[in-house]
Every structure is written in structure tokens, then in C-alpha cells.
Image (cartoon, rainbow, N blue to C red; front, side, top):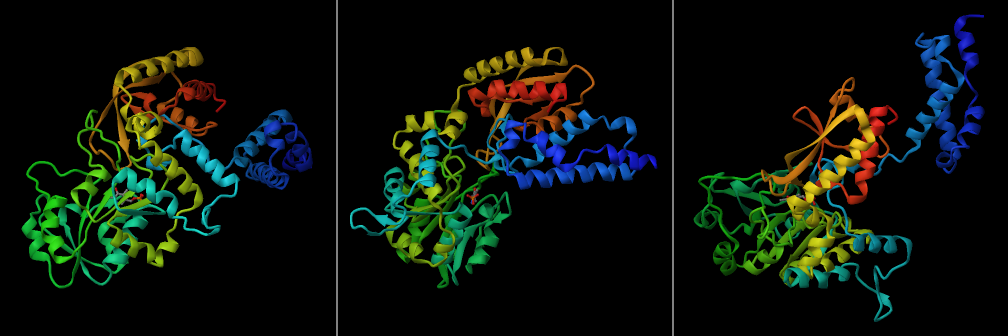
Amino acid sequence: MSEKTNLYRLLPSVDGVLERLFEEPDLAARPRPLLKDLVTEALDHVRAAIRAGEVEQGDLDEAALLSKIIDTVRRRSRPHFRRVVNATGVVIHTNLGRSLLADEAVQAVTEACARYSNLEFDLHTGKRGSRYSHVEEILRRVTGAEAGLVVNNNAAAVLLVLDTLCKGGEVVVSRGELVEIGGSFRIPEVMEKSGALLREVGATNRTHLRDYENAITDETVALLKVHASNYRIIGFTKEVSIPELQEIARPRGLPVIEDLGSGNLFDFAPFAFGYEPTAQEKVAQGADVITFSGDKVLGGPQAGIIVGRAEYIERIKRNPLNRALRIDKMTLAALEATLQLYMDPELARKKVPTIAMMTVPPEELRKKADRLARRLRREVGESAAISLAPGASRVGGGSFPERDLETTLVRVEPAGGLSLEALRDRLLAGDPPLVGRIEDEAFCLDPRTLAEDELSLAAGLVAAAFSGAA
Ligand SMILES: *Cc1c(COP(=O)(O)O)cnc(C)c1O
């Protein structure tokens, strides 16, 4: 008998492994056919390693092999889409799910999913109702607009507005506002998809009212403004305001449309961010149609919100494309609950996690960093040096670009052996995974984006990474 045949004989059977797996409480609840598939795959993997001569008799300690297979199955049976601990300090982290919902919104979603609802049912008449009716009134109250509707995301909102109001006509846009947002959303390309013709005016840094005026022809159907979002033009600049644009648009019956991007409803003036226009300001300035995201600075669910003058909103509602871009009931529930909080700005500041994380005082962050550092020292012991250092967080989501938020970072410097990259990789393989950043020769955790109840969890995950158990 060859040595390889001997090695194969040492492998446990699928049923043998499964029996052992069912003793693990977390695994016993998983679908059995899935576990069986995963065990078969894990054993195939070991067999392939034997075939390739990568396994020696000594490696096949039965208990060790079994626990390795169980670890593999546990890892691979977890949902692919799952929770992550965000220690990056980027509040609206596009790759980590953008905004977190307020507790009120989470509850509303849970109820909307688990129970029947009046989604498209009018409780006064007992007849069919409209799903759009649920948030229109609160949108009117919060933004001051005459009317509103909500679609899947802001990209869809822009597409729908252009498709309804601008198809086949020319839309005048400043060259300084032809932006590309992450995830391949580009204004010129969305414009093309909608069948509207882009008429660029002005220079990159400066556009004047006369530029817009000179560009208007019989073919013009709208003037469009786009919030630059993720970049900023500084220095010798000039953009034309909504009231100025209305001087030339209104007499000609042309709508002024603004893609506001991040969808801010909160007045950040008292904080250190600098000015960021709010949707209510744009309505007050006279924009006819405004579109914005629900899950950027607004801090709600993924959604594209359209508010403005009733005559335009009515036409947009009737566009058949609207049906293809419609939002689902979970989004509606979360959005209504989030918008309610904005009826009282102080409530929004406390309860909308995005706003709360953006506006937390630096002194509070320092104390939170200190609490995290103490837990880390207790948990990792001699494995790493833990220290505090001043640092910067970011808002993210293409909002407030180039604006650093003052924070205190918790620095983890491995005492030896483990490289920063290896530590990062082990933390990504943790359960749950933790994402931080490597900065100035340390793995850094920013307390801004860690919930209070995640401090212990984060410390435990770092300790597990050092002990190799992650
Ligand atoms: C983010 C953004 C979009 C896209 O919004 P989504 O909600 O991500 O679809 C469009 N326009 C601007 C100006 C943006 O900032």
C-alpha cells in the first residue's frame, strides 16, 4: 500500500464529520444539506492536498484535522453579506453600507417586513391606495416643497426627472458641475440615457448667468444644477445661484432642476464643517425640482428623494419608468421614521446615527478612545503597544470632501512577529470582521464610527487576531 493511500484512509467520513458538527450549537441550526456540501468540499480539499504531496502522515492528527474542517465549515456557512465593525472613522462609508438607521427606523422596517401593512391600501375608503402617499406629507413638512416622491436611489431620481422633463430637449449645465460620483454615476452619461441633450456652459471654475442665458434656445427644456459632492473647486470661482437662474428660467417657463447629491436636511452651521446647503434652503430659493439621496448625510435608507413644484412632480409620478424604479416597503418605513425625526433638529442630531457621529464633540471622542484603549490593553496584554494620538475622521459618501473631523485614534503597534498587514488581514477574517486603517506605522481604530457597545467587541477581535484565533 502506498503512503498516499494510507493518508486517504486516515480521513474521516462525511457522516463522521457531520455527526461531530451537529454538536456545535451554532452549526446545528444551519441547513443540513448546506453543511453536507461544505464538509464534502472540505474533505475534497484535503484529498487534493494529499494528491499534490502537500500533506504528510504527521499532519493528519485526527483531532486537529477535524477541528480544522469544522472551522472551515463554520466560516463558509456564514452569510456572505454580514455585519462588519467599522473602525475607519468614515461615517458614510460607501463600501460598508453608507448610513446606519436610527432605532425608530429599524423598528419601522421590522414591522413593515413581519406584518401586513397599508402599503397600497387607503384606510379611509377601504380601496386601493398609493405607496407614495405615505412619505409625501412628511417630505412637504420637512422641506417646504409643494410635492414629493421617492424612488430607489438618487441615480434613479435624476434619471427619472430628466426622462420626464427633458427627453429630446436640451439641458443647460455648468462645466464645473459635470461630476462623476463613485460607482460610475456620471451626469453626462445619465443625461444621455434619459434622451436629453447636454448643453455645457461656462468654464470649469467659473460660470456666469449670461453663459446660461446665451445657451438657451427653442430646444432648451431645463436648467440643471449639480452639487459637486465629492470635489471642490477653490480659488477664482463663480457659480450661479438658483434665484439668479430663475430670473432667466421662469419668464421662459423652464424648470430649474438641482441634483443636490447628499440630501442634507440638517443645519451644520454651528459645527466645524462649513456650509452645506439643505434641501429646505433649495426649495426656499426657488428650485423647481430637487433630487437627493436618502442614505448619505440624511442618514436614512437607500432612496432617491424628489421634491418640488406640484406640476412637475405630478408629471414625474405618471412616468411609467417610475414603476421600474419604485422603492420597496422597507425603505418607505425607514424613510418615514427618519424624516419624522427631522421635524425636531435636536432629535435628529441625537437619534440619526449619521448626524450624531458627525457632530459628536472631540472631547467625547477622546474619552471614548480612552475607554477603548483601556479595554485593548487589558485584552491584548504584551502582544501590542496601545496608545492614543490625534487624528482625522471623514464624513464620506462624497460629502464634505477635504474636510477633516477632529478625532482621537487608538493606535495598535504589534510588539513583534505580526506585521500590520497581517493584523489587518486577520481582523478582516474575524467574526465579525473589523475594518480599521493603517496609519503612521500603527493599526488605528477611530472611535467615531464605533458604537459604545462595540468597544468591548472591537478589543476582543483585536485580541483574537493576536492570539491567532481569528
Ligand atoms: C451620490 C450622488 C448621486 C447618486 O446618488 P445614489 O443615491 O448613490 O444613487 C447623484 N448625484 C450626486 C450629486 C451625488 O452626490
